Image (tube, rainbow, N blue to C red; front, side, top):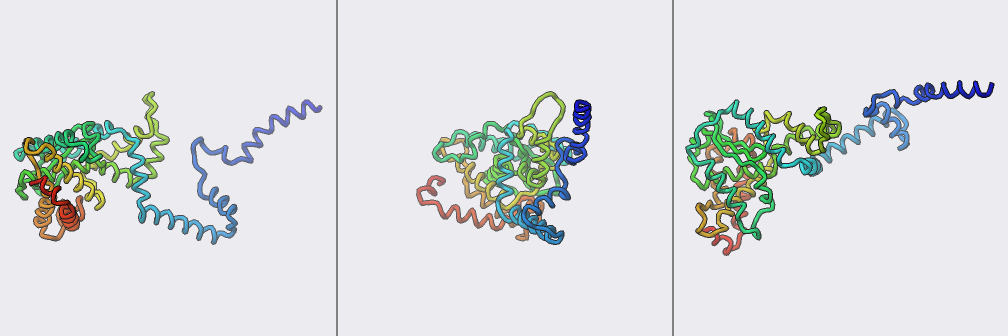
Length: 332
């Protein structure tokens, strides 16, 4: 009798375990709903009433939103995520984005020398004196640089796509009548966006939590085990169609201006032996010309994706004034 009773108990235990433990009834990998974990958490904290639970939840959300929007925390998270994504993924993403961009704005003949100036800046940044070199340029050779012009009669703008693709609209080139130095400043600015990976940062930041979650659970059934960074890159491909038209932040713009300044300054690293030199003050002159074209209102398509033009002009003026006389003489 004891043996039969023991066997009967063994048969009942699994059923009892499934009945008493609700977590086992959820699919593998699911997360307990707030209705389950919130009461458990508040109970441990000594919060008993439903009203207190609601106040606690609102307070937590307020703190999280404050940290997210009022501190650099979200920027650090985004930067950390993109650190795991290889540059080669940027190149692939950029080609996808270019297909969408040129479907809307078809390529036209480059009568302004955009390609030549862009390649000159790449070359000079690679060969510049390492003691004065911007660390941002250390991996510039890993990008597949591609410069060109697209037809957009009503759009005064330029595009920086991942992986090294820069496109300038013919409307900008026709309406602003840029000098070679100013055109170099424009191209250098867009190259700064590429090197800082600003498009990817905006895309990731706009949907950061979902990007992290999708990267962790990503599975494309191709038999290859992707790394976290590769999974993030594949997730970014979903946003390739609109990457070229994402608006940058003011911080992004200041960073791109600094990159343009350093790229133009690198053309002076070889003295007068350099094929062509572009003065870094041209970055400020470019922004002033854009601001004047806007009528001093900041209401054009350029300002919509490249904000803070007026303030950036002042920052570049301060940057030039902060140089020593010896440093200024280098650019004479």
